[in-house]
Length: 277
Length: 298
Image (tube, rainbow over all chains, first blue to last red; front, side, top):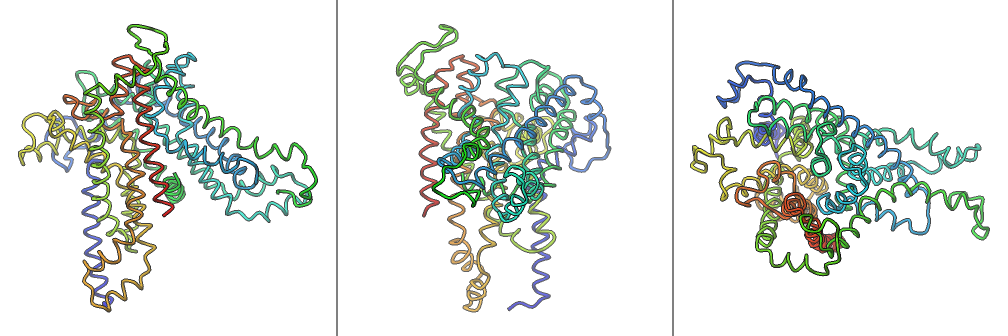
């Protein structure tokens, strides 16, 4: 067996290697952040260490009306999607977890199966249906389609958490005269609150970064979301890499922060979803 | 089932029978509206003759879309390219994830911090990463472009403009983006290997390489296979990354089926033909999903 000091030395060496590899693997992301705070003239030099720091690129994008409109649209769509996901997923998960009824397994499978269905596969029919409903170029269309992104994982993740809440807790409350639904609100929901917040966050993040549905359904500037706005920042003949990268940081930052905050819940739910799916 | 006071023989009140269905109904409706209805509609659409430049309304066309699809040489190239893309992406995912997972499978503060940060490529939106990589590969400002230029992989123009290199580089980026999911799965598999196995092997004098090939690899290969299949299905349906980076170009070098389908609707204005492409992709998805279920049962 190895001595403790050998072990410590070995771990220190492996830690150093871990950090080096981590920096290498994350360097494209680090680069985006560095470029966003660098004057355009310095970006041309391609070096890693920024000699001068500027927040002009951020001031630039936040002075652009189209970017602000997109920011508002993304917040509105993501916020409504998060709320609707929670409102729909909690009762569904409760039903799948607490009751036994005919068709339950099939319903659970149906909801989960939609998770494995890639947006590309149903893009054509969705676009045709939404256009024929006259909903193209509306945030309503985007909100509704984005609802499908996180809902299946939300249902299955919450079901796992509700399964873990002992039934006896609810039964005690029901004996005290509360209804089944009352017991759900009073007993179970408060206990799974962290998971509820996590799935809401997750739904928001998925909607926030969603690209292909937005690209296919939205063309007018006033209903564009952030991913489309970033394209607009880039597409014209003259653009600044610094500004585009600053736009990227604005889109990436909430995603990163929210994900790192809710990492434990999300990783559990996602691996479960991925493995079951 | 829920109220033990009611005996099995007594009919339960309607409200009680209906309650679980009512609770799950909105989720089912969303699933129907977003998945089942569009799938059936795509199937119906794929048998229509609908070319917006000629007939503005769909008319029954029988198999014309499928006939056109099998005769479309460009689509066949996209089909085979999609397999290269899918297998390549999963290969990169495994090649990057395996060493990282082995490194992160230690209980040190650095390893814990790194296993959180390694998730970033997976978490960040495609649009940000796509433009980030375009920036790195840009021929005027890109740091990575200089590196490629130095080693002779790129001339004065970006590697993304080179039909021979663009697909390879975007496959790598696609694998890089999906790699964290594989790291997570491998870490879970590695943590479940009993430590006694390694102790016994160490006593028997097994070298680290022997321990890796006779203990580690057999214990994680099932996970690798199943997650590889899940990631493969995701990769098969890619659209965002190749679209954001190259729009399928240069000279269709990065046109995979998702891109072909998108262009069929929005460039060629042939929604029914695009629907037929979707149906073919779905049949392949169904086979792959069935295969992955069989693997999991094993």
